[in-house]
Amino acid sequence: MDQELKLPFYAKTSIFLIGLMALVAILYIAQSIIIPLVFAIIFAIVLHPVVNFFVRLRINRIISIVLALLLATIALAALVALLFTQASRFTESWPILVDKFTDILNQTISSAAVYLDIDPTKIHEWITKSVSELLNFSTASIGQTIVTVGNGVMIMFLLPLYIFLILYYQPLILEFIRRLFCKDDQSQVKEIVTETKTTIQRYLSGLIIEAFIVAGMDIAVLFTLGVDYAILLGVIGAILNVIPYIGGLVAVALPMLVALATNSSVWSPVYVLIGYYIIQLIDNNYIVPYIVASKVKINALFSIIVVFVGNAIWGIPGMFLSIPLLAIVKLIFDRIDSLKPWGLLLGDTMPPFIKIKPFRLRRLKPKPE
Image 1 (spheres, rainbow, N blue to C red):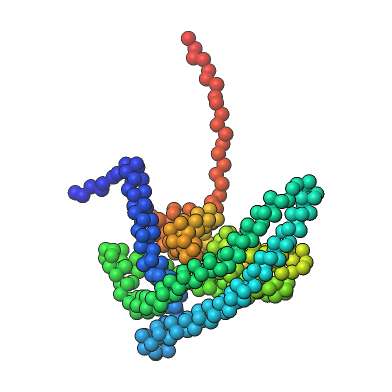
Image 2 (image 1 turned 120 degrees about the vertical axis):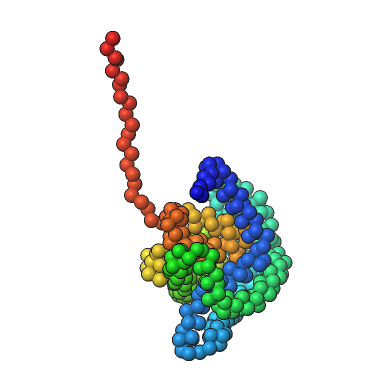
């Protein structure tokens, strides 16, 4: 009779930590291979309903995949061209923005130094040094950025091939996942895979729709307030909105700085902050629950932790991939009984608080002699 091997708690913990460290090491070492594959899998999941739509129109499957890739490439190329045009304008006027912002800081520091009776010489020296570093950023660092973008463009050429092959071999991949388990569990595995795939498609499609809506609202607010580079800042804000909490802070800080440097009104950054705060309220209370789906909402603690972990392992791509990947992991956890506690831990559903009665010491009565 087979006996189940039971390990002590410290042995299970040690095995788990060793496995986790090995996984992190593999993700870090093989990031140049894994990152394009992860992006390709995400895009393939999003494009799968489009491919099915063309297949239902009795179009050949290979041609359907090519058409879906072509539509996605055209949309992505239009977005990149728009961002590149706006970014080139922003780069040309970067030194002017630095000068204006420096003048504002000088005036503010001089007024504060007079009021607080502080020698502003050291502060002005620090500002001069910072300005030179910012100007150097606009020349040397931009060159390094172009090299990095060039490497990213080379990877982008591999993405369509990966996406095509993943979509083409999708039935084979799903059948492989089913056959990994015994026959008694195959029906349950099939159900879990189907539900998870459908929910992931809705979630990722909802993220894309949310990004377009938030970008439109950001651009409308910045145009209304007369802030320069409204399109660029609005699109960047929508992209950063994928990163919870941290991305929102950066997304509102950029237009506030541009508004402070380009507009004569001191209240312009405050109006930008108010406008972005209203957009965040709309996003959190209406767009996310009804479009992105509240079933895969991650709590604030693990959202921040996974963003920093993604940045430590994969850099900037890891920050953007961390939340969708964690949402996918939570979806899988929620559909497997043994892993449901982990899905509960990642989610934002608060259980009822358990009231603990205060412990009272009882007096011991002396025993009768």
